[in-house]
Image (cartoon, rainbow, N blue to C red; front, side):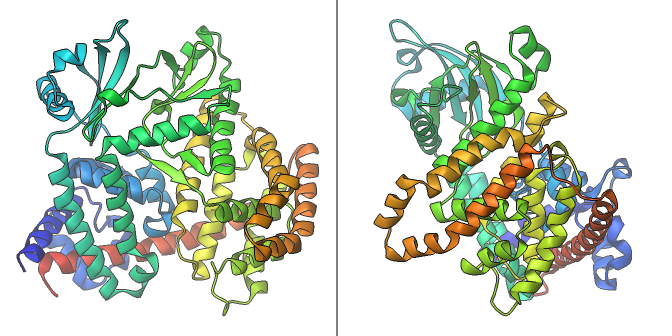
Length: 522
């Protein structure tokens, strides 16, 4: 009972903060709210007039930043779930600023001493003030006591951060349980699973040994990649609350002028960013899932260097094959095959006719063929696919959603470096290499070891897969994919209307759940 009261109080505080930013029951949806929620909107408090000209998604991001680290992480998780918050809000949450004022260097030094079990002077000859501070940890430049000494980056958790997250995650879980009891839509969106995924992600981020292990694994997997590298981990100076790694001497990729001054072609760097990401995702099934400009550098050898491995993505082999066959089928305009793949892996319930699902997929695919390849976003194609599958009761696939979110960020980084960037041409060598690995002799031997059933399924789908790959290759070599502009515009307008209606429904549902919690109506 006490836990329920405490969680309700924390949710009430969050609801009041969201209301002050006009992010809980936004004025844009006021006409669609029932009388009870209009009353709740008044009782929760007035909004700030400073937010009058700010879109609702941006207001939500600002409110979450005000609420602190756990809510910032919740916002980052929701940015990967447009099926929960809507496309516009998810896009706004991608810009959520995960930076806070640094805590005292003296506190960081005490944490280092306690975590490593020895005086800091025995570990570091020099320990500077923080150079970057985020919601969970901050980074210091330091110099080791080794001979010769090494320049390193030392990441230190914020004091008391574990307790703060434990309290708010318990409140999130409470709200999700109530929501799923009240709404079938909440059950379909798997809100408890979403909170569980957030809790799991945070648990990994709060143990810096796990981040160090992720960096080490990615370094091993990419050891033979000449254009990508990962900073070396200093395991003797790493613990649950402290992570020490090689200091990176490089140019931030967000600084185009500095790249050019250093002799690096921004267009070449753009290609390198996309190919590094796709290689990790398709070849290794293990990818850096936070590839924003602040985490990417170019060293003096022209190699891409990534930092901050707190968020990583994994794709199981069957998911990688599903993804590749789906994209291949789309670009070959084989919509029935793409639909059938979804049924083969039980993503779409069998009571939906496969032909109807294929028709819906055609509405996504056809607009691609009217525009030059450089104007077509691979990430947006996947996003539209996931939006359509929701209408056919497909449950969210966290692996693919994180991949799509990361791909959106990577595309944005590439186009900031090269406005005319063609992601299809940049991706082509990686995709061709992956398909060869999947259908070549080595792949056949590998499938045999996985069992006769897997081999039979591959043999059954191989002819169509190869035909699709041939069509895609021919289209790309011919300079692009084309469709009449009027068709593209009509599809876009129809999609916008559907998205707007879905967003209003989700806002009403979310506001209702919070209002019920706040007023104790259960």
